Length: 190
Image (cartoon, rainbow, N blue to C red):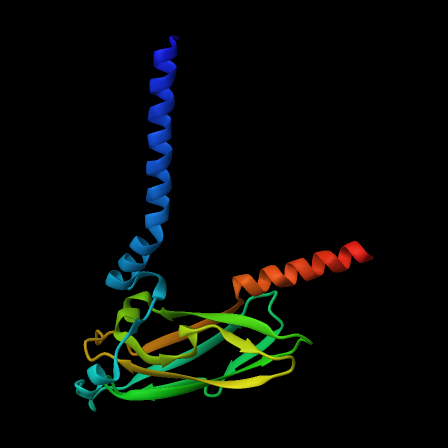
């Protein structure tokens, strides 16, 4: 193989690598847009207070919202909903309260990830306020009440009468890295 062919091949491979990196980088926002449009993956929407004021409440229909709370295995927190379920009219603004407790002896930053089931219903479940919008920092032994304010859209298909709002709390990535470093330092000292 000539030197010129090697340079051409290397150039093509370089361009291919850059294109693959760009495609991989673009997948996350593309996936989020796809989920938002289709309701796939149980991602919910958000609405402003001004938008909520324009929604008409459908008093002829009731939808049951069930709450499911989970903690990722390595997060030393307790997490629960105050109520296990709420009955709501589509278009009605409702609040749900959740309680989280840090059972460890150090401050920890956590992030809640929501999902809605059935997935088809997620595009009709809109939050105006949610603790999942930001990371939550809890001091050692701290307990915190957190609010989710939501509205179920009137366009929710009639066949859906029950929805499950699920949250899973994970240790925030930067806090997990700090915890891993501390654990490695402790192991080295032993």
